[in-house]
Image (cartoon, rainbow over all chains, first blue to last red):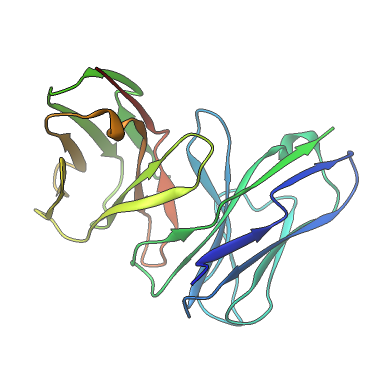
Length: 112
Length: 111
């Protein structure tokens, strides 16, 4: 099992460009999440999907959109990147709500 | 708004010593999680605590939850260098696994 995979690993964007971060899990988990990690702030939830076909906002959703493409895949889109979105992005999944979350390797995004 | 505070934020320990990391949170919850992160790596789940009084142990780490005090502790026994990492606690704000993370405790174990 690969667990949770994310692409790309690194990305540099110019302000105003758009991009989609991809996440896939092969553990048949129902719930998937997107977080960002900034120095000294822990992780903050951007969006989550409790089950296929549903998505909901987290703590910091502004500037992002998500798509739960199917049970395996959950993508995060930045429509118009801003320097404030420079961060490390982690995708995670869990079997059910309240279970431990399994994290992907992360995407390091820099917006100049 | 739920706030999660960890202390200390940085901990330098000698090998063989014991120490405790504290995680306080501001609103009622009975679901708390501990994660470990090595530098430049992803997060790894350590413990899931789902009720008042829950205690979990794995090797030299033991976690407990006191929901009345809104406090969880991560106790390290006889620290070894391999435990050097950043440790995060996270609290579920509602039954939806919408976790709020603490800022993390950077642990360095010196020989």
